[in-house]
Length: 176
Length: 349
Image 1 (cartoon, rainbow over the protein chains, first blue to last red):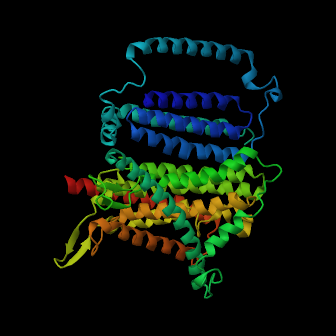
Image 2: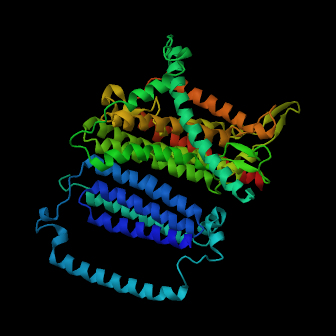
Image 3: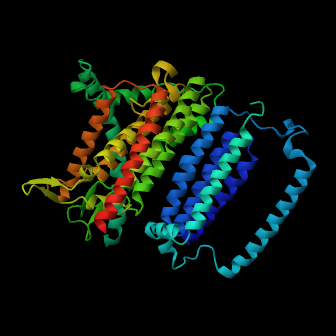
């Protein structure tokens, strides 16, 4: 029973904080709420008997990446965002973009509904799986990461590299 | 009535109580020690008026801070300005939760089964300490941002940049020890360091990882000083450039929380260094159940070195800090890790 309560508490914080991230006008608050959401996710990982993943979540996302986010927000001293200030020429306000975005959002909702429908077959979300303890072990995790999932691991690192190059290209000033 | 089933939870409660208060007392002692040692190094007396030899100085300090007016700048962010010092001190306390500080005790025969000294023994203990410490930077960064002051903002900016740069070297030096011990639990790492090597058959050398990892220890200590924002890496509060840095706008108890968090972080950093590199509570002469005395001695020595360095080495320049962190310390830590990994594989095969 305490596990169920803890699950719903963490889940509520994670979902609530994530929703509030989008709702904030002040980017500083968005960053902080995102950290809260990561913290709640890490609590859920602990409940799944995966303490290593939980701690890695805190170290990598909450501890390193979000500090970088915060650094950028502070460095730019970003003002409060105001939707009214967005003019019609903003690239995200083009009719084509909006149409595509709506389509994709609809697709996502359908997929989520289908996934949730399947979930009742898998049993309650909190129920402990017998192999959960082994997936939490650091040795097992490392072994499977560098043997069975080597390709996915390397492909992800290339993906991150591509994203980094893409960001640099996008951020480059045109007049140079 | 039978109290036996309640003894164990009560003992854990007592352990939390002792650790919590020990950290508060340690920060008070450090305030005094810092000023006394600073006085000695600068050839003056240091505090000597309050109590015998100035021993009551920390209490005078905290009383003064308690009675000061609590100010908040007009343009400050109300919520974050209040949250920041709390965040700093809470993470400082929580980080100590998985640090073991002694073998075990049965509380003078009160418990059937002996209880381990330390609040919690998690099998990823090293990483938990690292994770919680890395969250501590938010207290400083938020304090800098929410103050709505240019000096404080720059202090916060520097804190975040410095933390990211030195966390890498810090974690990499930890990883080398973890490889040697083959465990992420701090208690197991300490237990692997039990016993002696007989050097040349006569000289007993304790099996501490500092002898196997001298560079790792050096990197850990340097990165640790930078992580706790102590001189010569105290850029978030560099006085000659930033007034008082991130805590410029704070006063009274809210201000007091920042130095206290810093002192508690120093204690945690030293305690983890003791557990990882200096054999924890293992040492000669004392019986194992009094090992915590060795632990206190070792932590005290590292803390003394902390203060010693602060009043001996001048503050670096900010660009020197970044150059040193990225071009020297981090590559050195990676090299240390690779060599350690190769040697561990070679000797285990």
